[in-house]
Amino acid sequence: MYINDVHILVYVTFAILGVIVAYLINWCNDRMTQNKNIFSKEILDKTKRKKTDYILMLIMVVLYVSLVYFFGIHKGLYENLNLIKFVFLIPMLISALMIDYKLQIIPNRLNLTMFEIGLFLTFLYGITNVNVAINMLYGMIAGGGIFLIITLLGGLIAGKEAMGFGDVKLMGALGLYFGLSGIIVISLIAFLLGAIISIILLVAKVKNSSEYIPFGPFIVIAALIVLFVPFEILVTILLKVFTLGMYRG
Image 1 (tube, rainbow, N blue to C red):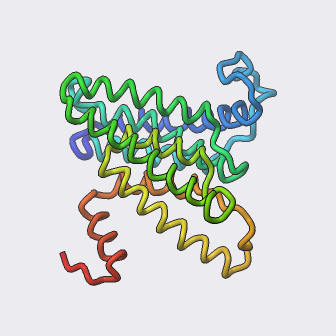
Image 2 (spheres, rainbow, N blue to C red):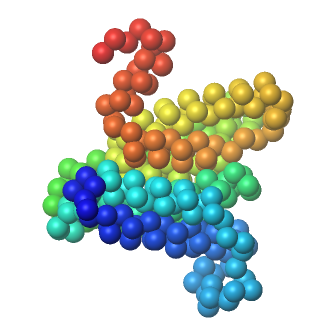
Image 3 (cartoon, rainbow, N blue to C red):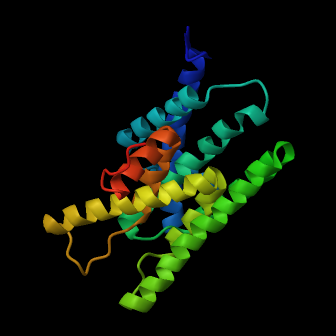
């Protein structure tokens, strides 16, 4: 049986992979936030394991199965690079969301790992298409640059950080995966989501104006939206939103 030209067993395999990765995400989150080594024999110690997070497992299964559906499976390595890079990126994104939401920080080790894998993938893309690799590097510069400017301006104008430097590093790393146009759309969606949700939290008095609202989760959600929603649809929606409906396309 095939779904979108991919055998059903491939979907099952990626679903199982999603379950395994969900466990590893919880493990890595605990180790990073405690400044402990991730690669340790303690990972096999049942007494060290946390309670099974079935919601996280379900999310990872859905995301991994969706990756196969959207990108498919091809014969050559280079034809599968888009699938491969997001197989690595998605668990790191989910990890960043969970840690930033709970602790208002994105660990340097996590951002550095994203950078390292992204740079290696950029090199692989460059072997077959230099223009793609250059676009990915432009994305890194634009992603980190936009948020660095906002952070610095926020510090000068408001006397405090508009967002953390972990967000700046995260956006720079994501630029390597989504390229220039992708990271710009991610930025716009993240700011839009941040504004809407922050207003809701303030109006509902869940947060007050002096409390810090982590921006990392908005970046992660925006990245997942760009990953799975057709680019042309997103651009059209953003144009309509930012032109107050005057854009007719």
